[in-house]
Amino acid sequence: MTIQEVALHLIEQYGYFGLFTSMALGIIGLPIPDETILTFTGYLVSQNDLQLVPTIISSFLGSISGISISFFLGRTLGIRFLYKRGYFFHITESRLIKTKKWLEGYGSWVFLLGYFIPGIRHLTAIVAGSTKTNFSKFAFFAYSGGFLWSLTFVLLGYLVGKKWMVIMEQVHNHILLITFIVLILLAIYFIVKTKVINRKMNSNTRSK
Image (cartoon, rainbow, N blue to C red; front, side):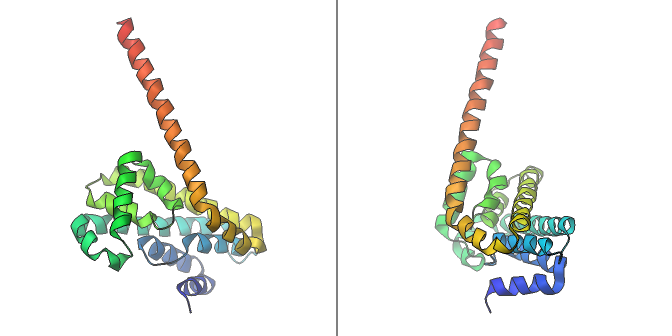
């Protein structure tokens, strides 16, 4: 039995608690297809096997529990340990370096968007913890991202119903492209925002 089958069985047998556990373990680094699990639970909601609001709450609480544990793992173990023993958490040196560059380039927004990037979710939290990022700042963006991520895929499964497996194949095939487009739009937003702020500052300086 694969890990995906085990996770799906947990949810079918234990409902919201199984969902919470699967989400937490998946975020920490266990190779669980989180989006698939969330979409499957949305399908279960459409079949009246689960209720929508408790499903969203359970998946959200599971995701933020996992991301918080990953953050404190990074803070406790440190970046050097992760470079040497990261394979215990399915972490490679190249992924650590890539995540650090993303954090340097996009700042706290990576904590929010990282949920939508496979293999990056738990890395953003671990790297943030190891670099002494303020937890309250991290939590604001990461918890917001966890809610949006959980809501998106649960509602997707709910809306597509029995077609959820076909839809998930399409999502997995294009998720990197979707994420890339989102990052480009985010970069454009920050560039425009920075220019607007600079213009206001220059105009205020001239008026004085």
